[in-house]
Length: 381
Ligand code: P1T
Image (cartoon, rainbow, N blue to C red; front, side, top):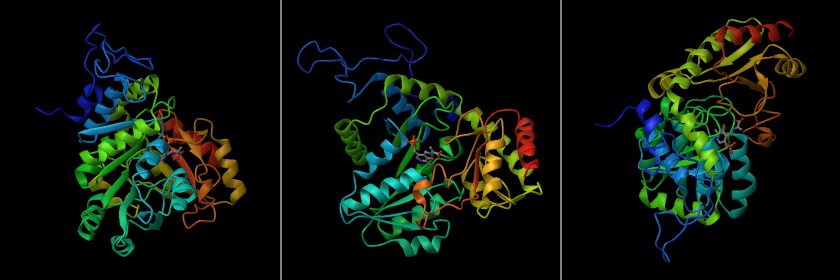
């Protein structure tokens, strides 16, 4: 009988070590593996090509997304870069008009110069999706919820439109913000999932990593070739940390969602807050899609205060529990200003983020403590 998500998170890809019985997957801290004769070995030759700790993580990631194939990388950007190497000059990518700043930077500063076309559309508007597709469109690139504006894209509807336009189009979903616990893009019709495992999958802000998961065997083989050929692989300790983090992903995501909903409601009721963006609030423009597609609204909130740029900068430096830092998805709460921090690369582009937008990664602290922290910071505005 197939196991449920919570069981897969703890066990998928991870058998007790056959030589010692160790229950936790060992950290195989080795660069190479002995051969009894030329080409005669136990499945591992050299650790760029494969390492048993990484194999366990890759199997676990695939299982969580409901797919047969997973690959782990040294960072989310390394995963995205590896995927982009499948593109050829003349190909077109239709992407969300709100994506992580590093993703936009890689497309715009690196892959555009190889003759690849990128255009950015409002993918929450299905008519804009239809109008954005071109004869040479190879991929539709979805982030949902998007970083940092938390737009929710209907994965099933966009995949149907893209595949009807051309069955060879690949629908790519960056599932970093939602995680496979909240939504499984491949079961909704997408073709490839990318992750920054640095975030919720690792979950403790102590590791940088990335992943690519697909059901397409031919694509997997190409990506595996590139993983080995270019070598942006995670080390065994990093793989272990992500595996360990994943074991508690379901319980963490439940609490991230519960805490974030409470914080979002608190902000929405606060007189000094101008606007709150959270997929779990019924005021969110795609709340209905979020309810259908995600188990809860996730742990990320964006908001604007009633105040100028100086007031906004002062506020983000005044919270105590919410640490002013880039990244997200850890057990601890973080606050940041995307326009000046994570999304600096979008300045002057059509993806430019409003300077007043404040982003929260709501952690697992007591939710009343988190609201009190925001209240004391807002009191000074
Ligand atoms: O940082 P790295 O592991 O390389 O992952 C890149 C990445 C990819 N996709 C999304 C949706 C992301 O949010 C990120 C990284 N984002 C941050 C560091 C941030 O603070 O938004």
